[in-house]
Length: 491
Image (cartoon, rainbow, N blue to C red; front, side, top):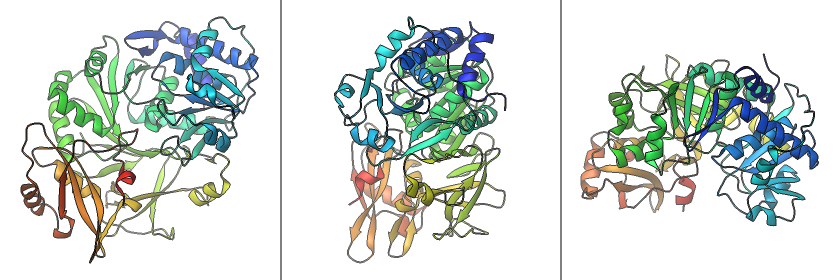
């Protein structure tokens, strides 16, 4: 492997392509030379404040140059960045305790966390980076711990996932290979930098020396389309499926104007409805379009090019290079064969896996007892090796002994005209134990007709998969990364 850490890749780019754009924030570019200097300055300032190699540093995430520079400064100082949600819970004491962290680089509210001894506003570190006396930076080894990601959001219940320089570099290299990233790639990233797939592209950017375009979500579509118009390089984009539906709802087929401009479109975080995939392929016939399955614990597991292999509903593709997948029963016995009616639980092994959960040996032993990572995703694999996702095992709804994937119901509903969004949930039933209910967000100005929806679903789904109850709602509750927030609907 060429590098021992992401920091080495950063300073290599700063030395060899100092005038090439590394980061774009609000249309303002920062070069690799500038970014390398800011990171070195932030590292020097933090070392002056007492940061030691191997210490975990909590950080409040932002889609800003300041966050990127300070994140890199923590790494360059030998620290282990643990980015928290920008709008996550203000009570960081439990998180600090679980990580055994003495450092918080955050906002004004975070400074009140008296249980954390070293509290510095992130913007202060960024401001000091320009003038701090440059220190000699520590060397790093491939198997040194380097990053903490979080599983489902930075609440007291989520787990910190520890990665090494080796797994970070392997993940970045995997993403660069999968999507053909080069020095002239400009990667548009509307999602928060700390979320798994976004930070994987971030790592790939440093290995390749390409450009990372920061966007603050999809609320400002004018900024999104302005980013697509960036005049330099080969534009690619990463979106969650909910963002694609937002684009269709608010700007119609405007995305089609960028056929030939968008080289790659990558989606992950949740299944992509088949109608959305078909519409994207029609609007952008010259764009490579991919779906990625992965987790904070594993890095990218599989990838599926639906522009090259259309018509595979709920498909997650084939294993990424270096990754091996297998399916097991509930006792983790490997299954020789699976199908849609007899799925298994996903497990994998490869060079991008975590070393474990931070300060949680029991949870680590449960998730990876033999070095493989065992997940809770219910999947099956066809004879060609394509993997298909039915959903999380604990999301599957048991209707009188018949198991129903809510994802399958939702995809069938989203294929119907007039439905903008929906979520299938379980409700109590006196006879079957559970029954299906579909919450529907109608398209604007489209009449809501539950009987018509039920009749249409009976044409495509087996009888027990058709919800018995329907309800109109203004919006589907989602997690921070765009996935349906199924837990919030459970009764």
